[in-house]
Image (cartoon, rainbow, N blue to C red; front, top):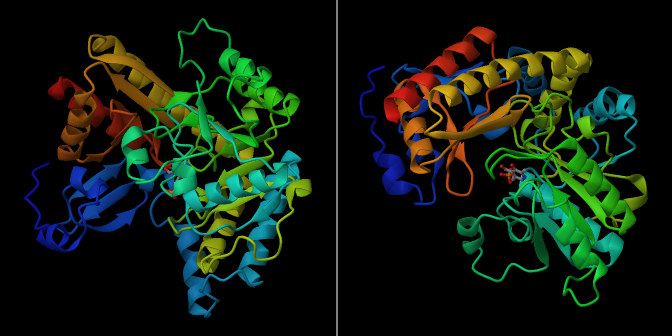
Length: 423
Ligand SMILES: Cc1ncc(COP(=O)(O)O)c(C=O)c1O
């Protein structure tokens, strides 16, 4: 694809230096449909990033769009205070009937604010309030958001440095397979918990991602997750699963922890819950933890009604038959895995490892700078793909769950070409 250099001067002069994704994708986007985005000159880009995982059902999904247009046309409430609305009621009922009840999950639902980090902040706050303790344990390479509480349980040094103040009351422990693969799981954690001289304050909670998305697509084994759940129970710590990126079907089942058969005390959900890229997040918790005072965690944008409309439509369309959705995701995931396996075999000197679950995959490059170079070449060839990992050493594949096998194949071929032409 030949791309004419777009005029980015307005962004470069008026928008803050903090802008980031747009730097890797120098185009001015105008339209988007399904798994494609189009720039203002009409160039099409196949999207393997899906709005950072906020578009599991693709751009401008026709069913969700229809529901949203109908709601707007009849002057449905659009502001976001936590009033009782018909849109919120319909979402809560769908979520209960389609997601929670069939899985025997007893959670109360809290709307903590529109973004993922809002959900994490509320989860940490609630855990601390319930247990009357301030310490939280997180994991190496975790990412939980950019506000101060979330940053305190996030690993990335660059992002942490941006806080400008000490990030306190968070202690990192080794994530699955962080050490040598031989050290018994949770050896260090158990040791600190059991030792009065360790310096670890008894934690209120442990927060974990089942697959670390920003941290480099690090997949926790189900046995590891089960042992973590058991440890939390035994040591009286709440288990928070941050399912903001890996929930809503990304790994197959609706919640990423289902495969491990564990029931976290608190779960954060965001990104694809609205299904349409509209900001929305949830903090779910066991009913006995619901000790909030009314308004103790408040905010103007706590009930994004248009997002409730698309969220309910997404649940009804894709999750009424959750087994079919899961099957499709796992089959597309297999298509990705096979390609990455072949690519790794072809370029084993360059690609250190590939890993993933469901429809989130990563290829780690030995020369860390190569991953960004591959993403850049992929963009030139018409594919939007991002990197992750502490040094951006992993090319990350996060296509919409609804991508067709043909589109997926096309994107994988572009990726393979970008790898060949870069290394
Ligand atoms: C696991 C996880 N938690 C929290 C967040 C923060 O969400 P947001 O960017 O909406 O604040 C992210 C974002 O990537 C995430 O992947």
